[in-house]
Length: 288
Image (cartoon, rainbow, N blue to C red):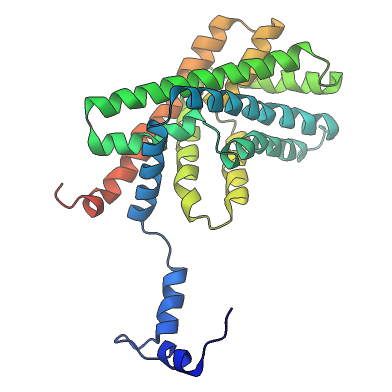
């Protein structure tokens, strides 16, 4: 930090009307947390940027995200294969692997459907015109399809190449079959909670001040620990079983995919995004 001249130091120590020096007022401003309206505007601006991106950019970034999120599935199996599963703490440790894919996707700024359910929907809620709704539909459809294609490529690679050991393959099956034990209703309800948590993660990231890594791990670890359902991460698991012939495409589609998709959208958009908008509506648009 550069040294202040005597004159500059005197200016910094001048008392403001509230009794604080200018240096102290500056320190207060540096430590102020973002108001909810500021966080909203940051996320809304990101949403507008995403809505304006070209189809090809969204598509390839979405495929990359699907491939990356497959590592949540694989990292869990890797950990489970080397941990003593007769110990009660082993499952808690192996669930940490679920965070790996999300760390790659979010820190690499790849297109993930459950992030777009919050960022892209905020400008649409504010504008509410047919053009904005059409842009949202284009974004959601492109990113979701690309995410699933990426997951399918990852699942095919793991299922039909010698990329993992027999021990890891066994754990992959255990993890995927455990998810598919949920009924469609359970997929939906657990998907609501997962959608809310991912939306909360997106909302908290602008205020994390360098703590993004720990925050992503914490929130996504809770999703794994609670056996919650995520439309993209779960697609890698469901498709893996389908490719191996251990599950039908019908069950993967109607027992897992559509109920989880509905739950994630409901939790992330209809609950979190709408409530986030309502709490700041008067600050960002006093006329409403």
